[in-house]
Amino acid sequence: MAVYSAAAAVLAGVESRQGSLKGLVYASNFKNVKQLYALVCETQRYSAVLDAVIANAGLLRAEKKLRPHLAKVRQGVSRNEDLLEVGSKRGSASQVPRFVRVNTLKTCAEDAIDYFKRQGFSYQGRASGLDDIRALKGKCFLLDPLLPELLVFPAQTDLHDHPLYQAGHLILQDKASCLPAMLLAPPPGSHVIDACAAPGNKTSHLAALLKNQGKIFAFDQDAKRLASMATLLARAGVSCCELAEQDFLTVSPSDQRYCQVQYILLDPSCSGSGMPSRQLEEPKAGMPSPERLRALAAFQQRALSHALRFPALRRLVYSTCSVCQEENEDVVCAALQQSLGAFRLAAVLPSWPHRGLGAFPGAEHCLRASPETTLTGGFFIAVLERVEVPR
Image 1 (cartoon, rainbow, N blue to C red):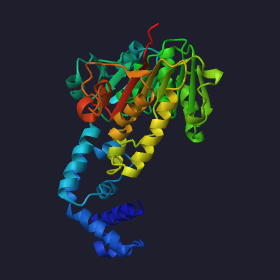
Image 2 (image 1 turned 90 degrees about the horizontal axis):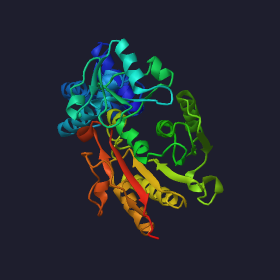
Image 3 (image 1 turned 60 degrees about the vertical axis):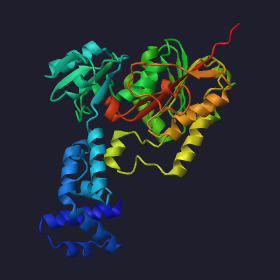
Image 4 (image 1 turned 30 degrees about the vertical axis):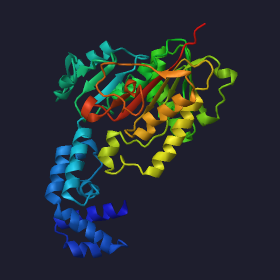
């Protein structure tokens, strides 16, 4: 990353007439002068194209800390064809709306809508489809057509300083990320495991569905992420969650503490290849190496097979923010085969437009999401349910 920052500084110096391109490169004290000089020359060569790509993608609006020259050199491409592909991906990612989940532990959608209206926002009612959401602009907002507690604002709407967000009444959460808890649908009083819980948005959604009645066992082995999650849950008013700094794979299904667990949400570590923020920030973040994919998929398959061993389990949601088949359909297929017919894929949301890849019979029951097809981040969801044994 140091070469990008150095190149950005050289370009800024050239633009402000602090010296010549070559002179500023050699005065930069950067160790690999040839590498820096080549990067600056290529960036300047395609400057007009890069300016258009960055403007059309809304990159600087989405990443306010990114300086214009740094945005140029971080595209990481060497051909005009690649620039066009980058612009297309960034454009799709930058058009994902701002989804806002109303935290029903603290308020209700009607009150949140009234609050925004008093602030000068124009409420457009419940969206009838994606076209209504695409047309959003300015200070207009909608109610999502699928999730009754989800508000939809135009892309790049910044609500981080909004008093309702600061007070935990609102959760800034992509629509696709809201689907796992919604589809798990644990009724109040249930015992639930959130297997890889941090940063905690899905956990807080589960608590809202439970109405804080029942128990959520939330696991994560990263102490820092778990501490941040505890802060998030406290702000959201969650009181039914028991946090544990523990690798889910070390949790024993035969432990009596979990004998009543009928619902598990498994959202394991993944490549993040579907995350719009990564697409905007890192051109190659969405293309994990084959070696990394194999390692991630192996872990995900172990975690899913482990989750299916909990004796009282009735329903499980497996989800990732990856678009890679290796982390999604392939993992689910392997786990179903290992379950020896004890579990099957549930047919959910038949009207959802983006389905699982045809990697195995029944994969169409899985859900996929993307900026292009659902106006959300890239996501994958599979709902597994225990097969009832005839008596």
